[in-house]
Length: 238
Length: 238
Image 1: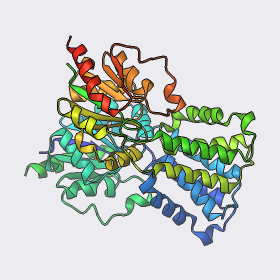
Image 2: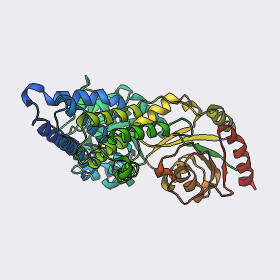
Image 3: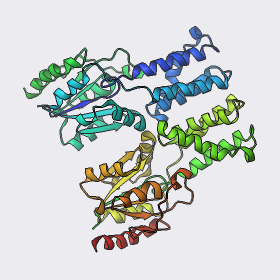
């Protein structure tokens, strides 16, 4: 039987990626004043800079902002104005202060799961920003544990399972990223409810894993989580 | 009796502040090309920008770098060159990749404490950078828990004490910051070993608390920790 249910934060409990994509669009608009948007594939070059810097910055809006500044300087061969670089810092600050808005039906979904299972919030990114979001989301009291982690891989999930004294077969993760929320948990022998968000950062879709597994149920929205959990709970008990 | 001993990370286990101060000096050298160093009190203005941004960025090198960029643009009224702003990003990256060098005698000191007490590492700052430092410091295996936190206040310490199932009277913290390591723990009823580092960030010395308390022993170096712990352990048992 499934004992412990983990919920992802960004784009599972609350809206997030839309703010990052709006920041990306604003970045492209600014840099587009200096370089030909069609020729230079700004989007790919920014993503390349961000991914190169992940090993130094980790995830989150501060690292994104520094990567945007670096990419803007490199792409424009230093022709960008100081005022525009200042504007990119403002874009990053705006991402850090965006309102925390819950996805439709997510409070009821977490409450329903929490009636029969221990629930943990496992969210990735900048510690300070994630703490602010957890604080403002209004759901913190529903969770038995809150884990803010720098990477969602087998090692991280194993640490959480050990802290909660369950094994992987007793653990299910709910999230919008196949790469970070579903694939590592299923590979460990756990279960997943995949709830895609309408936009996903390119880095998070970089996985060979698909939802075509008897250990995964895909749902369209939060009101499908309880039924998906029942299905997987029955499979786990079989 | 003291059950649990916490160790701070930066400037208690490993050298840190020196790298930040070197970054500060380099920042002042760059901005000094544009403004009169004596007139504008660069140091105070950077600190003011950093402290204002703490509520948005939290602690750590990425927030410091963004604050440096912002302060440099504001102080020079946008006269700074893009190449110099690029150099400031590089300064920040250098802080994130500085080598992790232990303070003299700290391994032996932690090992000695760990023979009779549970030891936890409680370190503040950027999650990703702190994890890298913990990984590279070579001491991680000595600790029963590792807590990377965004702020060291009573709430944070209480959470750690609850996780470790001890009360404040059974807890002692070893660290170089009166503000972050010693004052909140002593106010809660715990104990402190204050080991000043030769340089301290101005923000961390902003406290009314002094080490003149029967619950605090000041040591000059790591080889004084064991004796200080014995003194405070005897006081706690009395």
